[in-house]
Figure 1 (tube, rainbow, N blue to C red):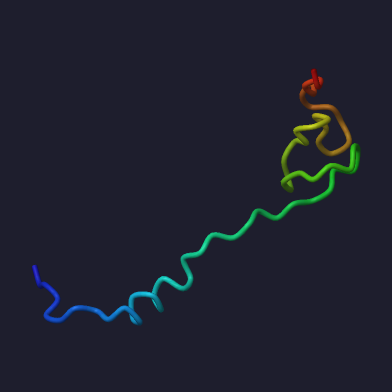
Figure 2: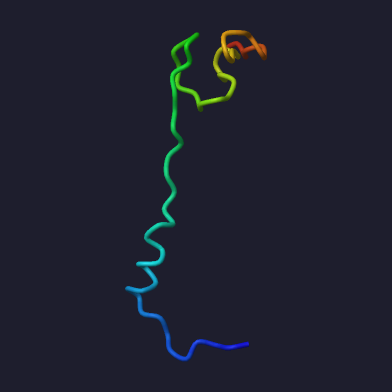
Length: 61
């Protein structure tokens, strides 16, 4: 297998890694309880999805 003949510079390495940063999840507002939730998922606060209750919400103790 071929091996690199010369070492890559720090600039070249960091330029390649410039696009590797993680981005935050996009959030949308739940139409039922107006809490932030991930889109196309059941709301963890109220348990509603598309206007109907899918799971029972956990009560705060």
